Length: 470
Figure 1: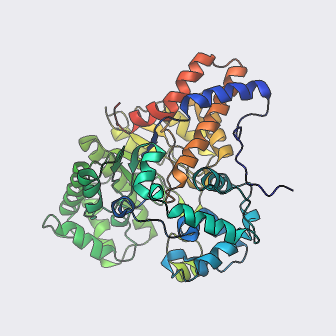
Figure 2: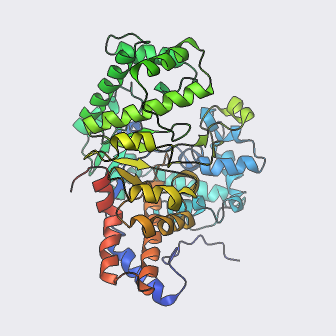
């Protein structure tokens, strides 16, 4: 049994030698192209502070939902990993816990990304285990102490052309101002407007948030005109800071064309604490349509990724807080749900609506047909639970036959783990090369067309969908 951690140069390519050779050639065209990351969750303060990463646990484990949720499933007390902001009292012990259970992530997309990080970025060539944990920890620590491994240096090393963060509408965007005005990075870092907490009638602190929001324009919390004006004012601040898109994660993709009076009535229920689940869905649905209208006016790209059961485990929510690895996908329906919004705005020139899902059944049944008709609609890349090699391949198979190669968003890494950005984009490029190579061998594409398409899938599509130019 080999104890060497290896990263095959042929990973994710087809088994068949002839198809593999074409995939290798196609991948060679894009492997060094710039990274465009129009949606993610890296904290912009990481680049402003430019501090050395603390240790292996802080860097690779503490914030990685994909990993610590599998450890939790195996009975590990993830409190010791610092999950949810809990104190990380013994990072070396936490790292030993993970390495002893390396086998739990083998075969997952997380293992592929982490192996890429360990081998390519950190120079680790031994398989994690209980016996090798300390050696790996020390090797990583030595690497983290080098100046070329600080966040800003890595940004340039990664070849990032654009990286979007995800930000609260009331964020002062100070970090983005500093990055734009004071830092000399090789690419752009832009904010993304995420208004979910200001549309969720049932969320804790909703009334207080709306009071702060409407206060920015001297308005009244319960007045729908002031509420909408404050949201529009916030969007303009983001645009001034370089924002290119908005991000929405509603309970469902349902949309409604509600009047001001209807929206104000629902808002009043939320502010009074009298709203129920039906009210909450209706308000989100009405606001999704309003946000589409705002996007038609100000030009921001609108991305929607609904239908996730947030904070599924009550005991984990109590122990670790929200967004700590126990969100679970739900079945999704788009065709009827999006009809009110699309009837109103789906053919408006310049409006771009990127629809994501983690219910793979809707790709060929709903999303590809919608994107194949409405000029506004693009199919979002696989994300979260289906951000993996096989799922990306299934996505291509489901979407391309109906909507072609040019009605999709381009790859979206959606990551909080800064070091995983190049690993994830490399994975996507390899999977696309394999997919296109199959089409060439099957006689469904000329190789010259495949060579153009893989470049477009990597850079041209995301630049067009997210209005980046270039």
